[in-house]
Amino acid sequence: MIEIVQNTIDRRKVVDSVSGPGSGAIVTFDGTVRDNARGKPVTHLYYDAYSEMAIKELQKIRHQ
Image 1 (spheres, rainbow, N blue to C red):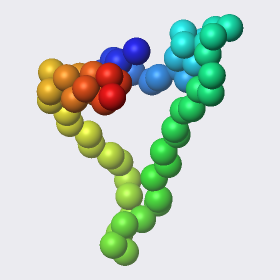
Image 2 (image 1 turned 180 degrees about the vertical axis):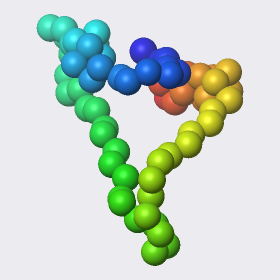
Image 3 (image 1 turned 60 degrees about the horizontal axis):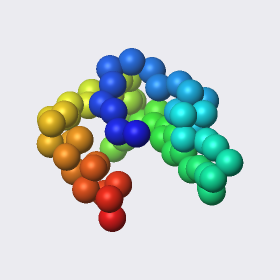
């Protein structure tokens, strides 16, 4: 499953979508952000991605 989304990811839904009798380990990662960086408070994050390229690269990784 590879998706670029704008909304909150429902981790349970993702895990359920890949779970099954033949599944081995399923690993998820939740990142957290410090409340400061370089001595300044972190108040928000901005992330921008080139979706088409990101999906192509993620597909390459999936097929390795």
